[in-house]
Every structure is written in C-alpha cells, then in structure tokens.
Image (spheres, rainbow, N blue to C red):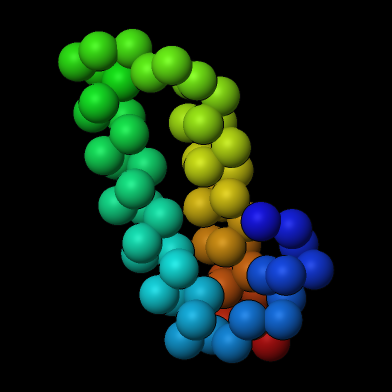
Length: 63
C-alpha cells in the first residue's frame, strides 16, 4: 500500500485496515513457523505496511 493511498483514508478506515492487516500478519507468521511460506517476502511487505498505517494513525492523533 502506497503512502499516498494511506493519506487518503479516514482515521476509521485506518483503524479497520490496521486491525485486519495485523491479524493477517500474525496468521502468516504462524503458518511460516509451521511450514515455510512459498514467498517469505510477504512477511516483510506486510510488516512494513502495518508500520506505515500505525505511523499515519499516530501522526494524526498528535495533530
């Protein structure tokens, strides 16, 4: 998810997406621990997207 797309979302949408992506990340992480993923780069991409969303939420709260 690009930064420009994240900035266009409302705070409620950010919260919703953040929750969904965090759940998806934990599920993928567990699946990877049991049997290696075909594309482990998914974990890094998803982790970074979660961080971008969390950063944008924090930035909006501080304004």
